[in-house]
Image (cartoon, rainbow, N blue to C red; front, side, top):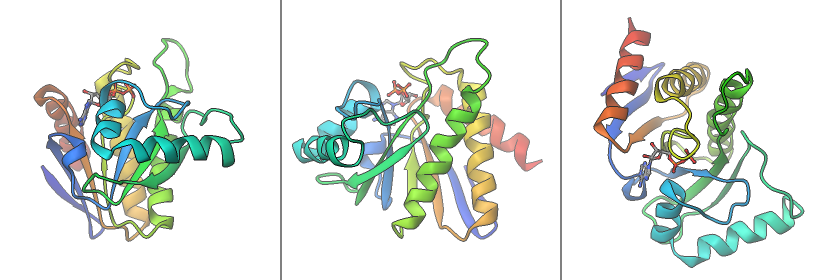
Length: 183
Ligand code: ADP
């Protein structure tokens, strides 16, 4: 599904984010930036070892050995990926009855988009951040992600944003939310 937002494109698709030919892809990283499972592992495998080297360098130099805080984002090269850049952001781990989780997830999208724009990126692909191992409910994540992306695209002349969903079920959830928003 593809929609126009203020002259920008917002697209939903199923697929593997490591194959995307957008200027940048976003990694649902963990705070250590040292790689992990899920989409993080797939991105590191496809990008090659140099990605981990640059992530370690960012930990040391930019983050002074601290973890990347939840909701924040950093950028690296894409190395062997078709994408030129990888933007690493840390989604919130879902905990019931904590009211700042949507805010933290929205920050992931907002900060990634701002960082992309600062780098001159005009096309970006996102995975469904936090809805894997971090257990964020997909429907709430879809509402938060799409609301944040749409607000951003309404404010800026950016280019295109693609949500790359890994399952048909996730795609259907995001599509239902986007259709609701378009009405
Ligand atoms: P988190 O820890 O933020 O929950 P995960 O990697 O566990 O991150 O999952 C985030 C989402 O990314 C899930 O929907 C998962 O199915 C999806 N995913 C896993 N591998 C890929 C991939 N290669 N491309 C796109 N999405 C992927």
